[in-house]
Image 1 (tube, rainbow, N blue to C red):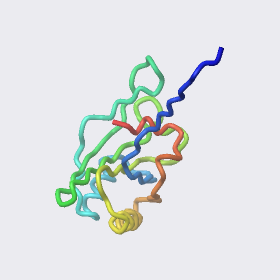
Image 2 (cartoon, rainbow, N blue to C red; image 1 turned 90 degrees about the vertical axis):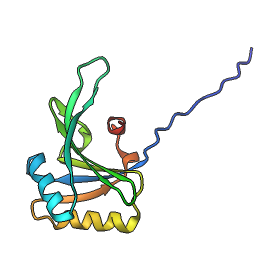
Image 3 (tube, rainbow, N blue to C red; image 1 turned 30 degrees about the vertical axis):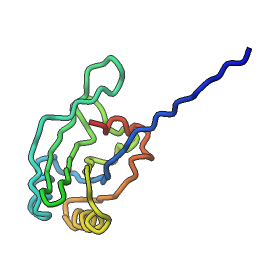
Image 4 (spheres, helix red, strand yellow; image 1 turned 135 degrees about the vertical axis):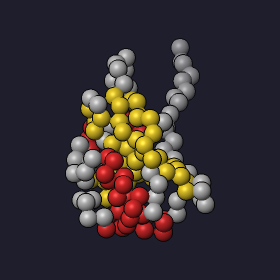
Length: 141
């Protein structure tokens, strides 16, 4: 007996750009500096709750948001270290992630990364490919 099988491949749509930010500062201090240097208006919102392991209590991560009216672009500044673990455990050296949803062109993105790196308190700001992150599902909200 021959069975016909169809295999469905499920691929997560990662429709955002991600910048890893390393800094010793607390979230509110670094957001203040980003607002000051980049003319942003990052504001604290409800923490991001992520269920790291199935059927366990969620882990909470500090989250700030900013919106560019002109291009309808959303920015989310999220702490990597939460109440009880890491958002992206394989990137423990990264303190925060700047997630950019909707549209940002390469020119603006490059300017944004170099502007972040010019802030003295930021050790490094690096663009990373979300597809290469093992625990990328934690970034879907």
